[in-house]
Length: 169
Figure 1 (cartoon, rainbow, N blue to C red):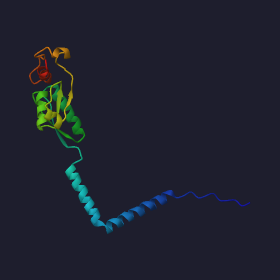
Figure 2 (cartoon, rainbow, N blue to C red):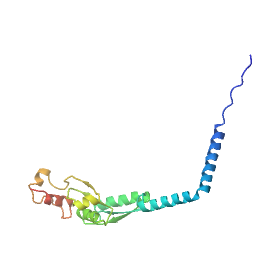
Figure 3 (cartoon, rainbow, N blue to C red):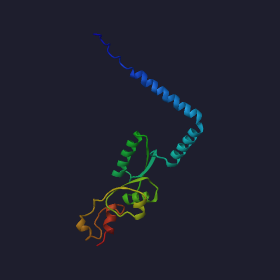
Figure 4 (cartoon, rainbow, N blue to C red):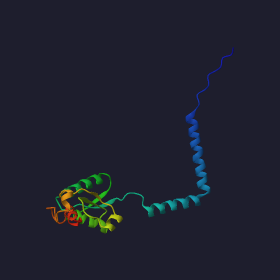
């Protein structure tokens, strides 16, 4: 009986490296012979990125609220967070959520704080979005909203007061 020698272990690393080198040479040859196609593609991709701007903005403007308010504190917290992630956050002080939504609707800010229920104008709601809860915080209960002419003791800049005044009786 003759004994057989075991099969040799394949040199996978060598074959993989050889394949990568062959593909690199093929790509280099394509670019060398069809440089005009590559140039047109690179210019087209550059123009597309310039026009579409798919990357997030590096600066965002946000309407907060009166100085030393909870909205102002929240804005400062967001500014610190975004600064750590490479985004500059410009804080715009306002009189309250009603003015915040007006600033958002007019395009003067990119985002706004608005907590409370108050009517959005159709143009504002369709052109921009705002983070808002639809609760009646600071106002009375929903059943009493329809009974009261004014039901919020807060300032006229408060969103809850605005909602209370505009609800149908």
